[in-house]
Amino acid sequence: MTKTLCLDFGNTRLKAAIFEHDHLKEIFVLEGDGVENLEQLLSQHQPHNSILSSVINHDERIEKLLQKHTHFHKLSNTSKLSFTVPVGKPETMGADRLAIAAAATFLFPQQNNMAIGLGTCITYNFISQQSEFMGGSISPGMEMRFAAMHQFTAKLPLVKAHWNVPLIGYDTATNLSSGVVLGMAKEMDGIIDLYKERYGNFNALLTGGDTHLFQPYLKNKIFADPHLIFKGLYAISQNNLFE
Image 1 (cartoon, rainbow, N blue to C red):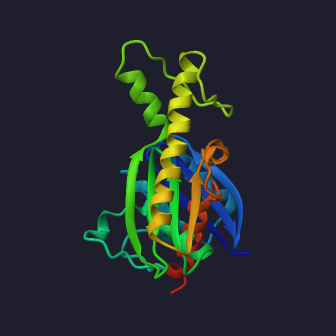
Image 2 (cartoon, rainbow, N blue to C red; image 1 turned 30 degrees about the vertical axis):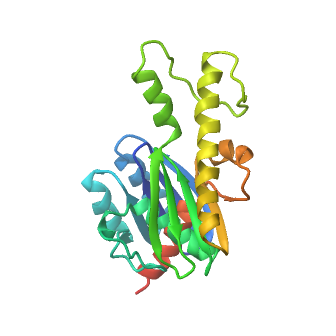
């Protein structure tokens, strides 16, 4: 059975997923520079293909390992994609955003899609029904907002969001959680509404590790999948690894 290793290197975590044909089988978080964990993954699973999305300056040994042991593709704006990128500088579009856009067009073709990625930053990625990735917007992510309030004040603590966020905070921690989580939810709803006002045949998607935390607070109907980026990477691999 053909296996594909998909790697997503973001600012916070290095993650990997194993696909067997079209099925996502397992997800991993790589520790440190990722080299030792990657060697173990390659030895254990022996994937035939691999694809890497990276927005960081990762260890150069990563690509050498993937080239040695797999049929390797590094995602960039020069990859064969299911959509065009008609922006001024397509080379500046993050690989993670390209992967999310690929998943959106694969799941909902010929629709106007807003794919929201929750990570270190929130990325709003708009793909038109003509399969054009037009760009979108970027704002601070959840952990960045919590960290900023802690680092730029004298006494506010560093807190982590809880699944049950009150509208009216009753202590400092819940005040911070309410402001960040509910504020982000309203931000996402507001941006979705702006796009819905302008475009018909509209679909919204949400992905990222914190998807489950925000989904209950969104008023808009949304397709939620925390592993959308991996599914997008796999879809792109099918256009680039079998030439």
